Each structure stands twice: as C-alpha cells, then as structure tokens.
Length: 509
Image (cartoon, rainbow, N blue to C red; front, side):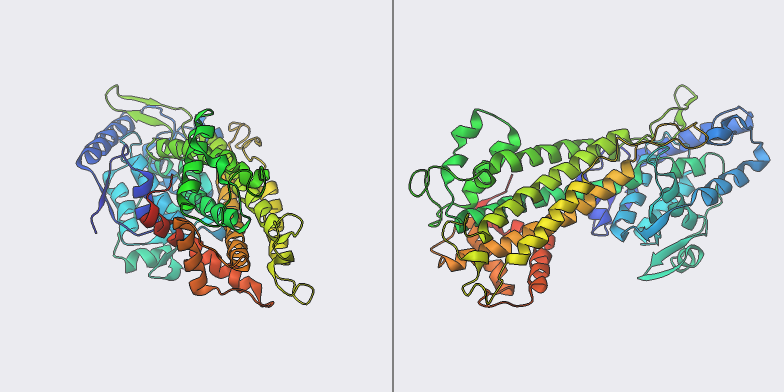
C-alpha cells in the first residue's frame, strides 16, 4: 500500500479517510522536512539569545508574563503536557485518534510551529505503527485549540498516559516499547506546538462529513423506495422545475431520484392517481438538496482547516519573527459543525415523515395499517415509526448550536471559546441517529413494496431492494424487530447500497 506524503498543504478528505479509517501509512515530504528544520533553527536561535517570546521562553495563558530560563525549558514543556491532560469521558474511537495524529503531523509539517524534526517523526512513526493514544472525548473548549485531548496524545509520546497497541490497552510507555519507538523529551516550544490546535474537532468533523456525504446519497435511495411504495408522482423531479431555482444540491437530488427510479412501474405521473404528493415526497429535491449544499460548504471548510497552521505562536522564518495570534480558535469549525448537525437532522426529519406516511393508513394510499396483513393481532411497523420519532426528537435537541455558547477560562485571558469539539461530537451523534432512521425507512419501504406485489422497481431501487431482501425477509407476522433494524443499519454503514447503485446507474451526486 503506497504511503501518503504530507506537506501541510495538500491533504484531501479522501486521503484523510484512507489514513484514519483504512490504516494507510504516511511520510513527510522533502519540502516539509526542510521547512520544519528551518523553523526549528530559528527557535533554537531565540533560546540561545534569551529572547522573550511567548511559549518559547515564557509560561502559557495567564502565565505569559513569566519568563522561563533555558535550564527550565524541558521542565516547562513536560509540565505543560501532564497538567493539561485533563480529558474525561469515554475514549475517542481509534479512527478519530488516527485522524487527530495525522492532522497534527500535517499541520506541524507546514514549518510554522518550531518543533524538532525528530519529535515530529516520532508522531508519524506512532501513526504508522498503530500506537493509538487513549484520548478522552470530553474536556475541550475549542480554544486554545483542543488543549486537553491533544495533551493525552502527547502523553504517550513522552512515555506517559495510555494507548491501544495491537488491540490491547496498556501504558503509553509499554506501547512505545513494544512498537520499538523511542519516547521523546520535549524541549522549547514543542509541547505547545503539539497541543495548541484544532485537530480533535477537525478529525471528528472530517469523518462525520465523509459519512454525511454518503448518507445524503443513501437518503435519496431510501426516498426513491418510498416513492415507489406510495406510488409517488415523478413530475416534481422534472429538471425544468429545478433549473429555474438553480441550487446545486436541489438539482442534483432531483437527478438522483429520477436515475434511481428509471424504468419503475410503481411510480405515477401527475393526474394519474393524484395531482400532487405531500411535501415529504414532492419537496425531496429542495430538502435533501439543502442538506447537500450544507455538506459541500462544511467539506470545503474542513479541507481548509486540515491544511492550516493552528498553533500559537507561529514562526515566520524568512522574517525571523514569532507572532502570537489566535489560529487555534475553533470558531470557523464550530459554526461549520453546528451547520452540519442541522443538515443531518433534516435528512432524518423528512425520513421519519416518509416513514409515517408508509405506516399510517390515512396517508399511505391504500397500504394496510402499519404494513402488516393481520393488523390487531400484529403490530407490524407501528413501533418502528415510534423509535424513529424518538431519534429525530433527540436530534432536535442535539442540533442546538454549541457555537453560540462561550465561557471564560485561564483567568479570563481566554475569554471567548468556540465549543467546536462539542459541535463536532454532536454532529457525529446526529449522523448515527439519522442513519438509523433511514435504515428504518428502507425496511418499511421494502415491506410496503411487497404488500403492493412489487410490480417492478427502478434500475437503482431494485438493486437496493434485493440487497435488503438477501438478509431481511418480508414480515408476514410480528417478529423481533430490533435485529432487522440493526441488520439494515449495518448494510447502510458499509456503504454497500450506494456503491452497488452507482455501479448500475453511475455516480450519485
């Protein structure tokens, strides 16, 4: 497997996922190595000259006016890490941790941080040898960056903390020894360079946006099945309708739906059965499209952040200057992740409404109540909709923006913080809920299609129906439903239905 070269400027979302989720190895580019070495040389020069520079020869935060002597530098950097490792809660998933390590290495490779090349190489080696620090999920304010969780990453680098190695949880020191990686004794600027950034929120958010884009395609597939189950009217997806409004996501969704439904015998045309459908069918392009436009915006912001220098202070080698600024502040990401959570919530909201139309005999155009033949004796899909309603209601609480909150810290030196990591974690939670709701809708739509004797599905929807029916049979009488829901969700998680549909009809937009 070829390595991905990182230089701080060109990492893509797709490459990020290959490293974080698929375990691909990375290597510093030659250009990055030169930049890192030049920046480090300037830091060493300032230390030798006893120049007063924040974070290099001073304390941190409120202690920025305390000058640190050369002899105390190593103690200062170690104390920074062990005192800031105050994260709490469950450990972040290993793919998130890998993403954090990759993003921090990528940011440091830009050559504005002043870290030693040997220290950066240690982080890269840990990533490649799969030494994954235990990083608690909670404890970041999102400014000054993700201080607490990133400190847990660095603990392992210095032989402290805990890590997962070869599937086992152990001390950081033991994990580094087993992987044959030399621990680091941090020196001037290095601790701050490693923890003063937005990589935790960005890693969580990057994985979430990748999965959100897949989920938006899944939502179009689920909606197409429901269109057939309810004999939906396809005229509303006519490209002429969407060209006069011209939102990209809306146009793409309408195109997706028509492509998935091509050759279907179960949809209808305007006036054949009804003049128009309810909004949850007729406005699919506008609603799904709005979320797609949201995801496009968030992806652009994430890819900017993935290739940004976000620590403080920054080293400008050519001018021989060190500038203390605020690139660690997570506000651009916090707003983006709150927006992402809202976009995901809407995919779930409309999915639950389509599910309600499937199970409600007053709305389903002739389907039996709760999609079961012997109603009364059987409850059918009654509580499937109930569970979906619970999830979308939970999402509405989670979608409340984290970024509108702030609380002062560090004796009011850090008097406005982003809450970006909370926003990212919430968006990821909403994603999981939305996927579950779509899994329920797809189950119900397949049940409804069978109840209508499956008169012939579209080119794309037929593939999905067959994939579902390979593992989950038609429900004649009540059975344990949660296992069916879990199976359906597992199929969605793999991305199989999107991949197979795209093989048949071309790339979904």
